[in-house]
Image 1: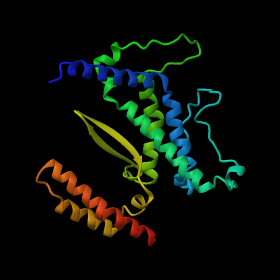
Image 2: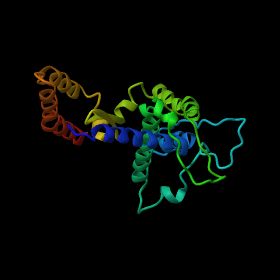
Image 3: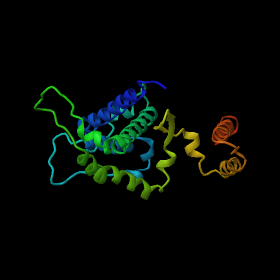
Image 4: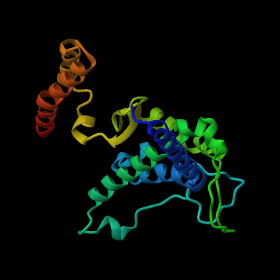
Length: 239
């Protein structure tokens, strides 16, 4: 046993909690949530305008340079030949996913709900122009803007649409789990309802080795790498 382990573990927890508190206080939840909608509307997800999401603005608030103001792609960008429109839309979806991931990670961070969070005081150089945010500010913007985004996508697409667009995995790091976000590759998104893909998934569930947790992970990973990915890529190329 390492005599310093307990002390080091406490230091790690304190560092994580301080990082989360700094993000909550210094990141604007409104700007972050607004950017999710803005970049969604500039991505290929809204090539059909029926999937456009109206930015959520407070009518009684007159905010100069409001991050909820509608953004339209100028003609020079549409016609650009060095950074083509398709690449712009792909990058906008990546930015939308990044903002979505950060909002989710910060708002649902367990560190923001433990007693240590309230005890930590962050020393800052005095700055009268700096605006600090609270968890209540995040909760308010989650309800007004973030949930508006989720509900609109679920209504115009379906309830599982974002599940197949912004993927999540949990990675075990020592005694804790770390949630990772990523944009699901186009072949997976396109073929999620393909009958042959569903058939493979059902077969995999039946045949995966469940003799131990390690064997289950190894068996599943091998099947995905050796069968699922090559199969989906082949089917996607045939479209």
